Image (cartoon, rainbow, N blue to C red; front, side, top):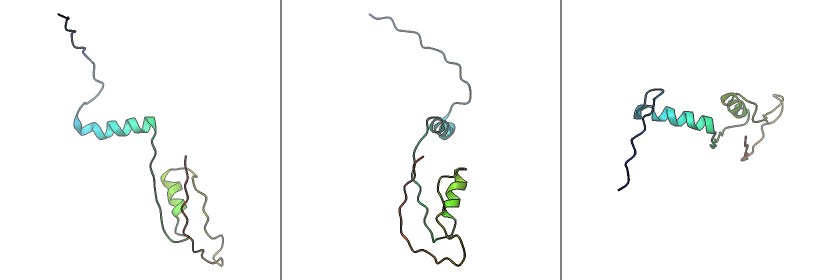
Length: 84
């Protein structure tokens, strides 16, 4: 008959429980990195590019808005993919 190994004891660094599982998952994802999709829609000149750049604290998207108030509004439907 094979010998049964003694269970190993571990020192815990912090609280362990189900109520902290979301923080544990968040910490692991932030460490490892992850991908997700975002869609922002709205009329020209409302600040969609500014919103994305502000949320991510980086210059990810160039604004394609009007440069002057005399410039006519563009009517476009465009799907733009940006990866970082």
